[in-house]
Image 1 (cartoon, rainbow, N blue to C red):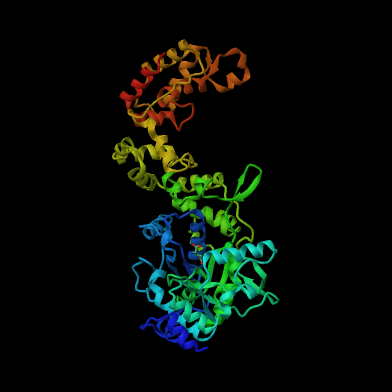
Image 2: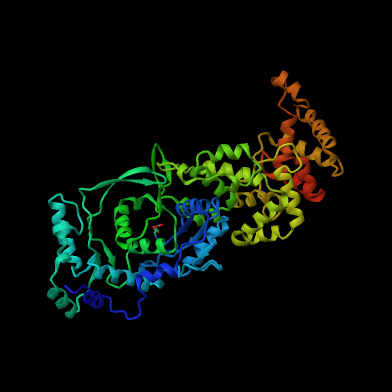
Length: 547
Ligand code: GLU
């Protein structure tokens, strides 16, 4: 068969660049031997999830701890799944978590020498290589219809054979020249398939950067490399793109491990050296007693939007993901509490072979700790950012008074105290927690544990004696003075020695005042809260709480 003629009939494009020229167009990168070139290669479906962030962090750390490059490639070969604005959303979401690309789609960089970074714009490159494979007898046209392929699959399933297009089932593999041209003349749609040279009889050992040594069986499937719309499949685009974008380390989900034999064969027939591969395990969660994969349908926490709306501190999410990526990160972080997490020696090889367990409670703990390390000013900026995007009108008006919020935050966070408080877990909860500092959102339920007369006596007497000029100890002395008036012990030691002698203690007096002022039985230092609220508002609250 005249393969050159066949290739020209199947790929008639007159303006293709010869395959070998691409080696010069996209030369090897100028990089140190250990510098990794990694990429995030999402499909622009608009849904960016925690798994993407987890993977992106592994890519970004692998590149940046080795002085390499991390780039963004958009795998938009499936036109039907494309969503407008999806690329911007990926970039924006990752940026929110502090992950930046060095080059790639929509990235403004002088380094952008390996583009285009949208696969649809690379059609000519793929077609040039497909044409060459046809000329070499390593690829061929397949005219099988969807129905024919389904019938073969059913037959294979019935006979307990491996499904797919291979060996005796690869009907178009040996079509005669006449048959091919007749089909073309009849205008039959076709795809281009790889003419696999492999055999399942052959096995070999492959070293995955995470999974370690895996035994791989050679590919014998004549996989589709170019679809009927002239656009390549993931398999083919991966081989071409990662070769010419000079990726050194492909980090991707373990669902691709089963396609590895195809990818290795494609690299071989194209004459490319394969990159290193690292197949990551999926993030898992506990669902009752069972461990399962995080699911898009069942788990809202899989979506990255969830973290933005709930106001997680971005660095806390990243630090938590770091603990999942490399199990020794947590220990390192405890030893180096002040260090930037980027100083940690991340290594892809240290990633766990089985799926890391994602635990929202642990993330909440990390988030509290990270927020507690901020200055009141930094915390204000963080909360304000959330308020601007997701807050109510009331939240917005509260945050307009920066000085007041900073005073409140200094107290709530325990700034200047011996130990920082960890009351703020995330912005949504933190902003809500400040509601009692504002009259328009102060909505107490007054769950007093004592009778009306006791509560009223406490409130009335404190109202009379309260002086905003009092320091903490004078303030507390006045609280103590009220205790005997309601049959409470004014010293805790007295109360503990003979609890049956008293209705309560000085701490119960404080609780009544606290509930009146804040609506809650627990709060930061009450004397300071009253000072922040000011005399007028404090007295008004004491009065309003009377039964
Ligand atoms: N577009 C593929 C996906 O979203 C990328 C896989 C890869 O990283 O190679 O699953």
